[in-house]
Length: 197
Image (cartoon, rainbow, N blue to C red):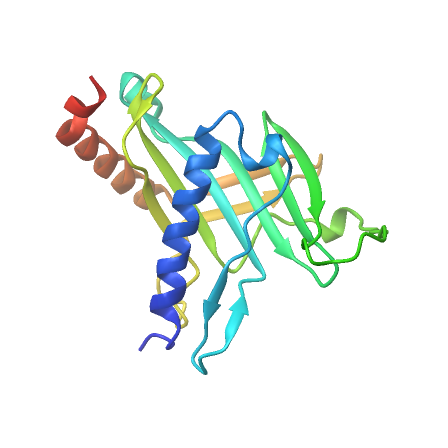
């Protein structure tokens, strides 16, 4: 049995994934244009509004012209809401970028934040994979995969992250699930390839 807010949270996460897809695909996106991230608010079982305090997004690409490479990882973004500010960690061209964003209603007073390497993780309760399917620079609507909404934890997690001893982010995808995802991506491409012409 799913927890009562499952449906509203799942729908909000689908919307969030599509917003981020638009951002990743835009040259003047929320990160480079003015800096920031999206809060996600959903209604819980008691009809109260709650923030989703953290999520991680994996942007991946299936290019039909390079199908032999499978689904490639392009970007990882971890969002975490804290009391004084929201914190974003993003893998960008192989390097981690960090930035914090205060709520627009917060005071203009500066804040000081300290953290060490043990405070940084790209894991969240909710992992969202956005899989762009296309060829060249033309894409179909993305496929969206969400891990972490099953309260029984019976469903297998499909994405795993950790930092190596050298501090490099390592991301692994569940092999059988990824094979299935590739099949879905290729099927979607073949079905709608005419739209990319």
